[in-house]
Image 1: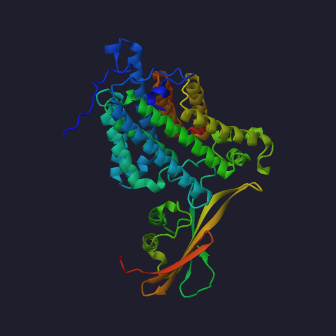
Image 2: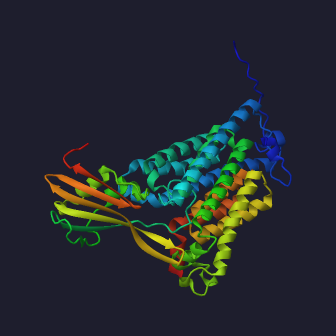
Image 3: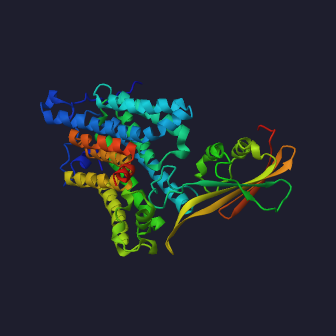
Length: 282
Length: 193
């Protein structure tokens, strides 16, 4: 017996273009969602760029090709017609890369594996799918709570010892809070304990708000500012740009061109290494 | 909570919900798949946290979120040799660069599983890449950067030792000590299995 499936013809989404709504704003929103995805992919490519020369030296051409495909997919996802194809290309390339380098793959690199390729499931207009945004919010929320739990288990944030370690032996940027303690070698002072506790609490609050579905614009703005600061502090801008792009998609706003224009040079600086630049200037 | 409810949650002046033309059935299926992926991810984060808190892995790897909780280990291999057959004799530290540990490092999964015994393939490649030391007993000590909280200290500590003893005629015995455990075995070098 044939099964009848109730398939409603899709109405065009308000962010799908001006044809139905006539609003330039909604077109921009759709473009901004794809732009956010493109920037997320560029951040992954920027991270891989640091390994590309080593891969070429070792004649691991398949990994070099995968990196180039990842970079190329950023262009594809930014265009409406090829956006899903771009996500598919990215997914295939990153899964191949991870299958070859899983043991050396950085933790934060895995976040891109858990998030970007999943957009492919949502069809050719993935950016208009509320369920995809929900998925991103849940994933980011779980990651934030997971990161907070790991800090709690390690105990190095509540007692400030990790901040003190960074202040003593971290890169130039990671030493920025060293001035808060008079004698770093004696161990963490109250200020580092307070900072460590604040960072942990921040992650917990952000994780809970994300899972609760809280999507206030100011929440996004504050979190983006926080992530940019964290990127400079840890000299790990590629990861923070990935986070920012994912947050922009998860909240449904996409990434405004001005924010993308800020992120791109930061990624270039990250490839060069922000700490080295500061060290050179100083 | 339905996606519509999420999108119109109070205090969430986010962009309007996507009315989308998805049939509710398709939407429901997608949501189940998405929730499944989130659940798998969450379970892995818990497994990673358990392994990290038991010091079983390099917490900066394997897709958990424990990076920036302890210093990166910056694994180093310290090699030493002694003439074969002098069991109990003094080990002579090999100068930096005298030992090639590249293939060993790769075959041993970058030593991310801290307590795991190196695979036979890794031990074979260590011997094959250092033929200049063939016939000598070898010792590889693996060290990592470690943060001690009480009293506060950051130092390099050896956490695993692999000793390879030549038994003659292409046969070696190995002994691996890490995380309070010791394992040993033998390898016939001509045996390619």
